[in-house]
Image 1 (spheres, rainbow, N blue to C red):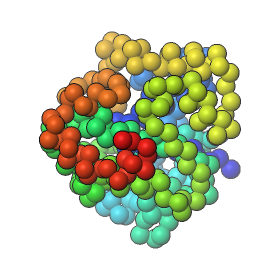
Image 2 (spheres, helix red, strand yellow):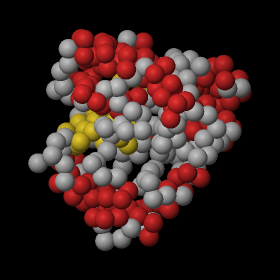
Image 3 (cartoon, rainbow, N blue to C red):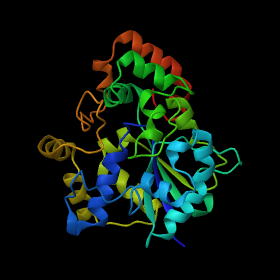
Length: 283
């Protein structure tokens, strides 16, 4: 029976970087992988197209709540067409549907990687990714039920299923819940950037994935932001939203939010996220 390893994060927190790194590690014969042909992160066929194929209704005909009710069976069916463990990217909050079942069928989830990033660094990237001002991005990140334009229109977008990101707080706390019925391995983006060799070694070992020091060093270099930015500059990136106001691989620099965000917005964001930040070890 095939299972999933979930790659979970709030948007613009390092998920795509992790997917590319894993693709380079697991498929060295194809490395360095093209950013437009990332191998890890989904099913063999597009998730949205698969949902419309497997389920009795297309996602565009369903409410968000109804879609959630179909998701567990959808993932079970999609996994039947896979030949190995699937690393599945998600920006969803971890939640239960109206039937009381997690949207990811827990018996098919081997584990989850939960990447967290300091909200001050998330905000400028998040805002530019969704075509928002910093003020609008701040509102979205602090409002649990805020449905930004991209989320409201997701079901009509044939490329993706609708996602419920929630606020930065609610999203983060949903993946920290002690009642989650599968292992969740949490890592801070800042730690991955500071010491990628040690941090990735520990993270992958916890999942039962073992690579040599040389393999990791090569994959880390192949997945460097410099190389990813060069690829995007030369060939674009199909996962970049049309409304984005900056390249997808924008900076990736730790601490850049302090110089990009107005001081009054920084204060609002820190006050709004402080209790969760402290649980994650952020000052």
